[in-house]
Length: 463
Ligand SMILES: [Zn+2]
Image (tube, rainbow, N blue to C red; front, side):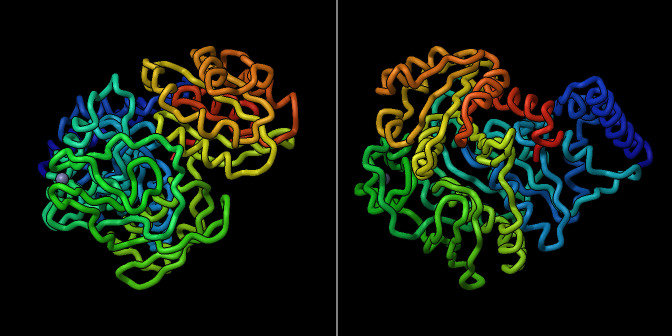
């Protein structure tokens, strides 16, 4: 690199960080602006920063589970002695990726970390692939999500596929064998590690059919011999023979319950038992993906198990906090499948509880809240054991109506303060039961703000 180009990159990085620092000082979070400044001053800054990482760049994409997977995989990698730089959850567009890497170098532009593990929005995958030439791309799953943003599911799959094509030579894809759309992406990568679940599991028959139960090759309806939820499971196409590939890393048994479980895995390195401190089947997928990523990047199995034991929930992903003696768990909800999984997880907790649902319709949440009608409240609301349902957010009334239609008694539904944080305070004053809070994305940020102000959670860059 010539001295002039180095100087260009130096100025881009340092000015972006100065702006980030000033912006935080002024009380703004803002993970986009520093990235924007850096890219204006040096359009190749992301490529250059990525190339400086000795361990390269790994991208995690897909509809649900990116943040939790990244948190668990990073814990495993760090246990294996690799320092990992991550982007904060939600800062998963190209500017957020740039901000994250620009924040990770010293004043000689040497990276502090060995490897970048970046959760990446599906729409950003073509660009991220092009600029970062990733060493690994991991795909969680494909569900219908915020239709007003990306249109059809096939569009989303195509965007991810374009990112996969940019794997660097020798690069590796980690794909969900149980998701037909994700598994079909194997055609785009020479070296694929599949992961999946391989244990007997009772399917909730009332679960609505998945978004993607049709063959990605010939559009026939797939036949399932095992289904874990939605369209995730063991499938085969009766017409063209497309079928679930054999996973290289698979979960053969799950023992324990709630957030005290253990997974028995079969891996290329032999059997491996890992603890899982997060509830729900969807978190079994997140955990096995995290394990697969870490193993595929060369982490020792013992370090992977130790990392999973240390791995905590990311904020708003079922992490428990205690406020005024009351246990509060927040679980982000952003699409029907994710919401269904959260509701089923609540039903597994037999205690009496209260539930606060905070629905906003800002851009980052998706402006159209009609997806709430695709959530299976009818099938599961009665089994949750909620003493009271509170609703908040800009679309609190939509949520109240949705619950009423699902058969929840009116006297159990309270329309609280429209501000999710204020509503949380209202609920906490009422009872001492455990409280589950289910916010959309911007509602979650508002709740975090409130919990931070009250000293319940430390002020932290999410991640
Ligand atoms: Zn087919």
